[in-house]
Length: 136
Image (tube, rainbow, N blue to C red; front, side, top):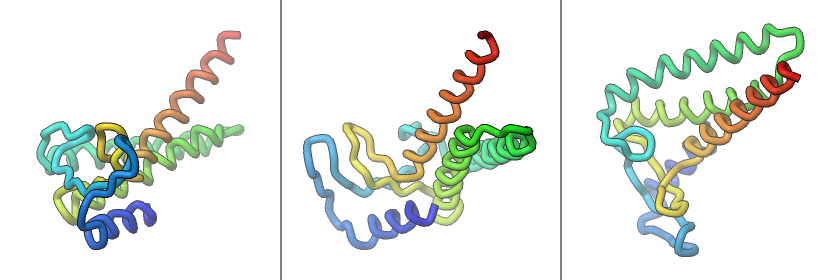
């Protein structure tokens, strides 16, 4: 969360113009007032849904920790999701928008978005792996 907030500060204070490294990679300041993928939803509804989702992910972490053999892949994935979601929630609560800064393809995202995506991927893959193990 700290590194993402540092990049967001840098994007709003030092990156005064876009820097395109290649056609699809670079950085550019984008103040995202919508939800994920720029879906045009107001700040208040996004906050209203984000807080329960973060709470659910924390609950899943606690539930995993209580197991005799917790999955560290699941815990790592959930921790990444909590970190990314908390950083973006902090933006919404303090600025009413999320600061995005990395240009990847046709999207402009931030480190928090990347943490959420990687966390979801790890969590999902581990769930699939453990379900496959139950059926064998």
